[in-house]
Image 1 (cartoon, rainbow, N blue to C red):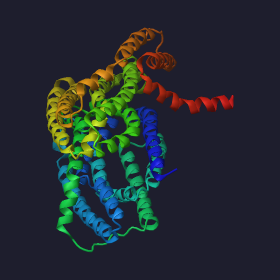
Image 2 (cartoon, helix red, strand yellow):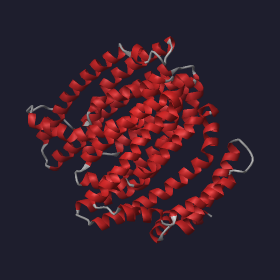
Image 3 (cartoon, rainbow, N blue to C red):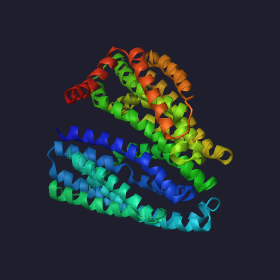
Image 4 (tube, rainbow, N blue to C red):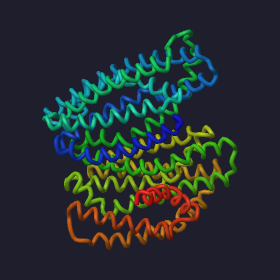
Length: 506
């Protein structure tokens, strides 16, 4: 198996592992820390996350430039680029320390209305540790970038999987021994240092990479930042989309509200991961189509094909969460997290359209037209955050997410107009064929699923019975009534090796 295929396999393994372990680990962490302490932990993590954007998208830039120099067999150019990048990172790390120090001495005024004195003390300790860690971790991104630029995907991805599993086990141990949020931060920082060292050894010893400044070239600097600026803007978009709400709530509300919001957002991101795992299989081929000047009609066909597969998977999850999600959240983290279910549901509804149109992003990337999307997203997500902050004063976490997703909805409508007018995707046909057969089956499944919800009981066994019945109904109805010929063939092809193996074992 090639490095590329192994890397893709490990990528999906990471997605599944992160989601499954997260579902089991999160309620344990909340129980051990308590709602307020968990909220404080996520709040400070989000706060430091904003400073982490000072990376300016350089890690992805390293991948692109290293791959370019390797293709050109320009070893000196590669060495000079990597040395230049480390100089830039030295400046960035210094900037992180400066910005972090300013923020540290203003934490009291930032969170004066939401944290008590004990929480404020813990917040300062965690923040100081994480800022120092960030100054070390950001430059270490170069080593991941080098591995990917050399098309060595297995080692860094395996390292991350091992780190995640080890971290999960150690978190359980630390918390069982009475550790608190500060202990978890120290654990994370320690693991970062260990695994950064491992990556450095691999890059220098196995890949024989050198960092050597031959010429400090201003033109190279312009190229680096010219490429990384749009990555940086998308990083900012991600911060406003997933993290800024925690910061706003940490200022206007309290750590418990932050914890409720964080759990809801986490469930919403899991929703997106399932769709990405499906569409990611087709996106490389889709990108090749755009490079080879595929017609608007061909691009529309591919967008429909990928969109329908994502939509079928997403409607299964959305329907299940709409019907039984409240019961799941109550059993998972407790009834005090009722609003987490509502927050996740709002995210899922708003996030569905961008997910089923993921192919559109590949077209923009292939045609070098991401700048429009980056700017429009950033503008409206900032406006959505402002609206969310205003609503949060009255409606708490639900108000915050409502304002944020309002920005998402506006952006996606603007992007649909852009896809139609500029990229010439037939958006009306896309929606017509996306909903063909699938929407009636989804509605029918919801009606039957509502009846299934009448099964008496409250515990996990009751939830599992409902989930199994709902899954059987959805799969049966969608396969027989909701799918078209291509989708039926794809499902049969995917499942046939499993059935053949079961027959052999029988």
